[in-house]
Amino acid sequence: MSRSLRVSFAVTCAVVVSVPGLPVAEPLDLIPSQEALSPVQILQDFKGRQDANQSIGWSNVSVAKSARQTGSNAGNVVDVSDRPLNSVRQNFEGKQFSINEIVLNAVSALETIEQDASNVGNAVIGGDIGNVEQYFADGSVQNAINSLTLPDLPGTLRQSGSNTMNMVYSEQSVALSSQNFTRTAQQLVDNRLTVTGSGGNGSIVQEGTNLGNIIVASKVDEVVRDFSGSQIINNVVTLQEGATWGSISQSGTNIANYIEAESINYLKQTTENGEQKVNNRVDVVTLDGLTKSITSPNITQSSNNFVNMIVLKTKLPDGSSQVVDVLQKADYGQSVQGANGAATAQTGNAVVIER
Image (cartoon, rainbow, N blue to C red; front, side, top):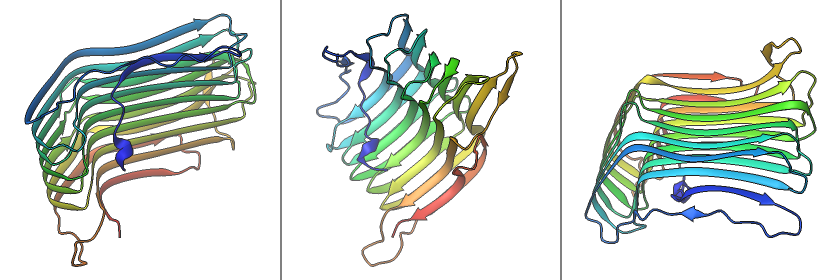
């Protein structure tokens, strides 16, 4: 992972439609002011619900070439670039729903459709960071939902959903961090695409990512964290019997308790009670109304589940490996449905040293 983990924390809800001869409308970004100019001690407490909801029932798409829906939520975010932070405490007790829905009666000139839903909660980005406490409470939910219904398949259909909770990023150091992802908290990605007609030669791409308890820094002194909630990704395509398609790609990644640093002094991380699940499925509705799951050479399904992952980036100056005091415990369910011969990884309690 790299600086690319630094997500855009704009609360964005947009639909972009490209029409020949007309300029393309740009998304409207509503950016909450959560950046402290001279931070010393910061307390953020999120309670309630955030909704980014886009729903389109489109009856005439004869001139549209492409359509894009994006919905995102951000709650409890501190971004001070490379400036120092003494103390940050973030409590998240609520729900984030990003929902994109499109229902089409005809495809007409459409060539591409994209849906992107994302949620971010409890994120800290800074220089030297002192004490960070992050808490994702029981019953709290992040749910990224993309729903698309159409009769035929144009060139490319893409659905992507992501959730990030409890993230600390520093290019310098983190002194003390406590991250808690509680027992009944959930991160859910739902990508659902339904073809009601004869299909076509288009391609379908469905992607989902859940990140919980993430730390990326140069040096980390002490980290204690627990992950007891659930991370679930559902990528589901539903076709009618006899429908055709070009290709279908479904992929999902769940990461619980990930830390990346050049040196780590002390680390204790546990995962228990919850589950990581990737459900990649292509269903066909038969003429008599029954539903069956199918596989095919042009259906690619992959999944990656990681629990308690440590990545040490470099050696110490004297050439020896880093000495890390690590206690890891994983009593946690990992399951995959729909692999279809593609890459599938389920990793728990792993330490990787990059030479």
